Length: 286
Image 1 (spheres, helix red, strand yellow):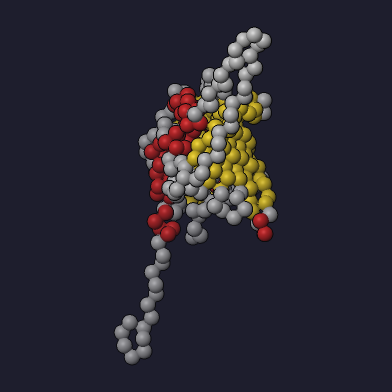
Image 2 (tube, rainbow, N blue to C red; image 1 turned 30 degrees about the horizontal axis):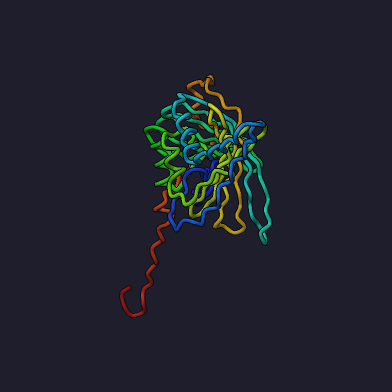
Protein backbone atom coordinates (compact mmCIF):
# COMPACT_ATOMS: atom_id res chain seq x y z
CA UNK A 1 0.00 0.00 0.00
CA UNK A 2 1.30 3.43 -0.86
CA UNK A 3 2.20 5.69 2.01
CA UNK A 4 -0.71 8.07 2.59
CA UNK A 5 0.68 10.33 5.27
CA UNK A 6 1.39 13.32 3.06
CA UNK A 7 -2.16 13.89 1.76
CA UNK A 8 -3.84 13.39 5.12
CA UNK A 9 -5.10 16.76 6.31
CA UNK A 10 -3.91 18.74 3.31
CA UNK A 11 -7.32 20.37 3.48
CA UNK A 12 -6.21 21.94 6.72
CA UNK A 13 -2.45 22.04 6.53
CA UNK A 14 -2.85 25.47 7.86
CA UNK A 15 0.30 25.94 9.90
CA UNK A 16 -1.45 28.68 11.80
CA UNK A 17 -0.88 27.73 15.38
CA UNK A 18 1.63 25.00 15.84
CA UNK A 19 5.11 25.66 14.55
CA UNK A 20 7.61 24.56 17.11
CA UNK A 21 11.31 25.20 17.19
CA UNK A 22 13.61 27.63 18.92
CA UNK A 23 16.34 29.96 17.87
CA UNK A 24 17.96 33.29 18.47
CA UNK A 25 15.50 36.14 18.47
CA UNK A 26 15.57 38.25 15.37
CA UNK A 27 16.10 41.97 15.55
CA UNK A 28 12.75 43.54 16.30
CA UNK A 29 11.30 46.08 13.95
CA UNK A 30 10.08 49.19 15.74
CA UNK A 31 6.38 49.25 16.42
CA UNK A 32 4.56 51.92 14.45
CA UNK A 33 3.76 54.96 16.50
CA UNK A 34 0.08 55.59 17.19
CA UNK A 35 -1.36 58.57 15.33
CA UNK A 36 -1.15 61.90 17.08
CA UNK A 37 -4.40 63.41 18.31
CA UNK A 38 -4.86 67.08 17.50
CA UNK A 39 -6.11 69.12 20.42
CA UNK A 40 -8.88 71.67 19.94
CA UNK A 41 -7.73 75.32 19.85
CA UNK A 42 -6.85 76.59 23.30
CA UNK A 43 -6.57 73.10 24.82
CA UNK A 44 -3.35 71.30 25.73
CA UNK A 45 -2.15 68.58 23.37
CA UNK A 46 -3.37 65.08 24.19
CA UNK A 47 -1.01 62.18 24.74
CA UNK A 48 -1.09 59.57 21.93
CA UNK A 49 -2.94 56.37 22.73
CA UNK A 50 -0.73 53.50 23.88
CA UNK A 51 0.04 50.71 21.42
CA UNK A 52 -1.84 47.48 22.23
CA UNK A 53 0.18 44.43 23.23
CA UNK A 54 -0.14 41.90 20.35
CA UNK A 55 -0.04 38.92 22.72
CA UNK A 56 -2.78 40.44 24.83
CA UNK A 57 -4.98 40.96 21.77
CA UNK A 58 -4.56 37.29 20.85
CA UNK A 59 -5.29 36.23 24.43
CA UNK A 60 -8.55 38.20 24.34
CA UNK A 61 -9.49 36.35 21.15
CA UNK A 62 -8.73 32.95 22.72
CA UNK A 63 -10.61 33.77 25.93
CA UNK A 64 -13.65 34.93 23.98
CA UNK A 65 -13.80 31.72 21.94
CA UNK A 66 -13.26 29.51 25.00
CA UNK A 67 -16.41 30.97 26.54
CA UNK A 68 -18.54 29.92 23.58
CA UNK A 69 -20.19 26.48 23.97
CA UNK A 70 -20.65 26.16 20.21
CA UNK A 71 -19.96 28.20 17.10
CA UNK A 72 -19.39 28.04 13.36
CA UNK A 73 -17.61 30.11 10.72
CA UNK A 74 -16.65 30.12 7.08
CA UNK A 75 -13.17 30.58 5.62
CA UNK A 76 -11.94 31.48 2.17
CA UNK A 77 -8.36 30.24 1.83
CA UNK A 78 -5.58 30.61 -0.72
CA UNK A 79 -2.45 28.46 -0.87
CA UNK A 80 0.75 29.09 -2.86
CA UNK A 81 2.32 26.19 -4.74
CA UNK A 82 5.86 26.76 -6.01
CA UNK A 83 6.98 25.09 -9.22
CA UNK A 84 9.81 25.57 -11.75
CA UNK A 85 12.31 28.35 -11.00
CA UNK A 86 10.29 29.88 -8.18
CA UNK A 87 7.10 30.44 -10.12
CA UNK A 88 3.97 30.31 -7.99
CA UNK A 89 0.42 29.19 -8.54
CA UNK A 90 -2.34 30.03 -6.09
CA UNK A 91 -5.16 27.62 -5.35
CA UNK A 92 -8.31 28.42 -3.44
CA UNK A 93 -10.58 26.53 -1.05
CA UNK A 94 -13.85 27.37 0.69
CA UNK A 95 -14.28 25.95 4.18
CA UNK A 96 -17.07 25.59 6.72
CA UNK A 97 -16.26 24.83 10.37
CA UNK A 98 -18.60 23.71 13.15
CA UNK A 99 -17.65 23.29 16.83
CA UNK A 100 -19.48 21.96 19.88
CA UNK A 101 -17.45 21.98 23.05
CA UNK A 102 -15.75 20.06 24.46
CA UNK A 103 -15.40 17.17 22.06
CA UNK A 104 -16.98 17.63 18.62
CA UNK A 105 -16.10 19.47 15.44
CA UNK A 106 -16.47 19.18 11.70
CA UNK A 107 -14.64 21.04 8.93
CA UNK A 108 -15.70 20.76 5.29
CA UNK A 109 -13.44 21.98 2.51
CA UNK A 110 -14.08 22.30 -1.21
CA UNK A 111 -11.51 23.85 -3.51
CA UNK A 112 -9.57 23.90 -6.73
CA UNK A 113 -7.59 20.74 -5.89
CA UNK A 114 -9.00 19.38 -2.61
CA UNK A 115 -12.45 18.25 -1.55
CA UNK A 116 -12.33 16.85 1.99
CA UNK A 117 -14.05 16.58 5.35
CA UNK A 118 -12.52 16.37 8.83
CA UNK A 119 -14.78 15.12 11.62
CA UNK A 120 -14.22 14.52 15.34
CA UNK A 121 -17.02 12.83 17.30
CA UNK A 122 -15.35 12.57 20.71
CA UNK A 123 -13.89 9.14 19.95
CA UNK A 124 -12.43 9.22 16.44
CA UNK A 125 -10.82 11.82 14.20
CA UNK A 126 -11.75 11.02 10.60
CA UNK A 127 -10.52 12.54 7.35
CA UNK A 128 -12.53 11.76 4.22
CA UNK A 129 -11.21 12.56 0.73
CA UNK A 130 -14.21 12.92 -1.56
CA UNK A 131 -12.19 13.02 -4.76
CA UNK A 132 -10.52 9.67 -4.03
CA UNK A 133 -13.40 8.24 -1.97
CA UNK A 134 -11.15 7.03 0.83
CA UNK A 135 -10.82 7.92 4.49
CA UNK A 136 -8.51 7.50 7.47
CA UNK A 137 -9.38 7.27 11.15
CA UNK A 138 -7.37 8.08 14.29
CA UNK A 139 -8.74 6.72 17.56
CA UNK A 140 -8.60 9.70 19.93
CA UNK A 141 -11.13 9.53 22.78
CA UNK A 142 -11.33 12.74 24.78
CA UNK A 143 -11.75 16.41 24.00
CA UNK A 144 -10.62 18.44 21.00
CA UNK A 145 -7.28 19.31 22.60
CA UNK A 146 -6.43 15.65 23.18
CA UNK A 147 -7.42 14.65 19.65
CA UNK A 148 -5.45 17.44 17.99
CA UNK A 149 -2.41 16.80 20.21
CA UNK A 150 -2.44 13.11 19.29
CA UNK A 151 -2.79 13.89 15.59
CA UNK A 152 0.21 16.19 15.77
CA UNK A 153 2.53 14.22 18.07
CA UNK A 154 1.91 10.73 16.71
CA UNK A 155 1.15 11.49 13.06
CA UNK A 156 2.82 14.84 12.45
CA UNK A 157 -0.49 16.47 11.53
CA UNK A 158 -1.33 20.03 12.51
CA UNK A 159 -4.83 21.35 11.96
CA UNK A 160 -4.64 25.08 12.45
CA UNK A 161 -8.18 26.38 12.06
CA UNK A 162 -9.50 23.43 14.05
CA UNK A 163 -7.50 24.70 17.01
CA UNK A 164 -9.74 27.75 17.21
CA UNK A 165 -12.11 25.43 19.07
CA UNK A 166 -9.44 24.04 21.39
CA UNK A 167 -8.73 25.30 24.91
CA UNK A 168 -4.97 25.59 24.31
CA UNK A 169 -5.22 27.72 21.19
CA UNK A 170 -3.09 30.53 22.63
CA UNK A 171 -0.46 28.12 23.92
CA UNK A 172 0.19 26.97 20.36
CA UNK A 173 0.31 30.52 19.05
CA UNK A 174 2.77 31.68 21.71
CA UNK A 175 5.01 28.61 21.67
CA UNK A 176 8.58 29.43 20.57
CA UNK A 177 7.85 32.97 19.45
CA UNK A 178 10.92 35.03 18.59
CA UNK A 179 9.14 38.29 17.73
CA UNK A 180 5.72 39.87 18.20
CA UNK A 181 4.59 43.17 16.67
CA UNK A 182 1.48 45.31 16.79
CA UNK A 183 1.35 46.67 13.24
CA UNK A 184 -1.67 48.96 13.61
CA UNK A 185 -5.37 49.26 12.83
CA UNK A 186 -6.51 47.75 9.54
CA UNK A 187 -9.79 46.90 7.83
CA UNK A 188 -10.52 43.40 6.55
CA UNK A 189 -13.43 43.52 4.13
CA UNK A 190 -14.90 46.47 5.97
CA UNK A 191 -14.29 45.18 9.52
CA UNK A 192 -11.89 47.23 11.69
CA UNK A 193 -9.18 44.94 13.07
CA UNK A 194 -5.91 44.87 15.00
CA UNK A 195 -3.13 43.84 12.60
CA UNK A 196 -0.57 41.66 14.40
CA UNK A 197 2.65 39.98 13.23
CA UNK A 198 4.58 37.13 14.84
CA UNK A 199 7.76 35.22 14.07
CA UNK A 200 8.87 31.70 14.85
CA UNK A 201 11.91 29.83 13.66
CA UNK A 202 10.46 28.61 10.39
CA UNK A 203 7.41 30.79 9.81
CA UNK A 204 6.14 34.33 10.04
CA UNK A 205 2.42 34.77 10.49
CA UNK A 206 0.07 37.72 10.57
CA UNK A 207 -3.31 37.83 12.29
CA UNK A 208 -6.12 40.35 11.93
CA UNK A 209 -8.33 40.31 15.05
CA UNK A 210 -11.56 42.29 15.08
CA UNK A 211 -11.47 45.38 17.28
CA UNK A 212 -14.19 45.93 19.86
CA UNK A 213 -16.04 43.63 22.23
CA UNK A 214 -15.95 40.63 19.86
CA UNK A 215 -12.26 39.88 19.21
CA UNK A 216 -12.77 37.45 16.33
CA UNK A 217 -10.13 36.28 13.89
CA UNK A 218 -10.81 37.81 10.47
CA UNK A 219 -7.68 37.12 8.44
CA UNK A 220 -4.51 35.02 8.58
CA UNK A 221 -1.37 35.10 6.44
CA UNK A 222 1.32 32.49 7.03
CA UNK A 223 4.71 32.76 5.30
CA UNK A 224 7.00 29.71 5.16
CA UNK A 225 10.15 31.78 5.37
CA UNK A 226 12.58 28.84 5.35
CA UNK A 227 11.10 27.17 2.28
CA UNK A 228 12.32 28.18 -1.20
CA UNK A 229 10.55 31.30 -2.47
CA UNK A 230 8.60 31.69 0.80
CA UNK A 231 5.14 30.39 -0.16
CA UNK A 232 2.16 31.83 1.71
CA UNK A 233 -1.16 30.56 2.98
CA UNK A 234 -3.96 33.11 3.40
CA UNK A 235 -7.40 32.80 4.97
CA UNK A 236 -10.31 35.23 5.24
CA UNK A 237 -12.69 34.18 8.03
CA UNK A 238 -16.32 35.32 8.06
CA UNK A 239 -19.89 34.40 9.03
CA UNK A 240 -19.13 33.76 12.69
CA UNK A 241 -22.23 32.28 14.34
CA UNK A 242 -22.48 31.54 18.07
CA UNK A 243 -26.03 30.19 18.01
CA UNK A 244 -25.88 27.63 15.19
CA UNK A 245 -28.34 24.74 14.99
CA UNK A 246 -25.99 21.75 15.06
CA UNK A 247 -27.63 18.35 14.67
CA UNK A 248 -25.93 15.41 16.41
CA UNK A 249 -25.39 13.55 13.13
CA UNK A 250 -23.32 16.48 11.82
CA UNK A 251 -20.42 15.06 13.83
CA UNK A 252 -20.97 11.44 12.79
CA UNK A 253 -19.08 9.99 9.83
CA UNK A 254 -20.80 7.30 7.80
CA UNK A 255 -18.56 5.93 5.03
CA UNK A 256 -20.10 6.43 1.58
CA UNK A 257 -20.68 3.45 -0.66
CA UNK A 258 -17.46 1.79 -1.84
CA UNK A 259 -15.31 4.19 0.20
CA UNK A 260 -11.91 2.67 1.01
CA UNK A 261 -10.48 2.88 4.49
CA UNK A 262 -6.75 3.58 4.59
CA UNK A 263 -4.20 3.78 7.37
CA UNK A 264 -2.63 6.89 8.87
CA UNK A 265 1.14 6.46 9.00
CA UNK A 266 2.62 7.26 12.45
CA UNK A 267 5.63 9.57 12.43
CA UNK A 268 7.95 6.87 13.83
CA UNK A 269 7.01 4.39 11.14
CA UNK A 270 7.32 6.97 8.40
CA UNK A 271 10.83 8.03 9.49
CA UNK A 272 12.29 4.64 10.45
CA UNK A 273 14.63 3.42 7.68
CA UNK A 274 13.97 -0.02 6.27
CA UNK A 275 16.40 -2.71 7.47
CA UNK A 276 19.26 -3.48 5.13
CA UNK A 277 19.09 -6.75 3.32
CA UNK A 278 21.92 -9.19 3.98
CA UNK A 279 23.53 -11.22 1.24
CA UNK A 280 25.39 -14.46 1.58
CA UNK A 281 29.05 -14.48 0.76
CA UNK A 282 30.43 -17.22 -1.40
CA UNK A 283 31.93 -20.04 0.59
CA UNK A 284 30.50 -19.01 3.96
CA UNK A 285 27.50 -18.01 6.04
CA UNK A 286 25.98 -14.58 5.80
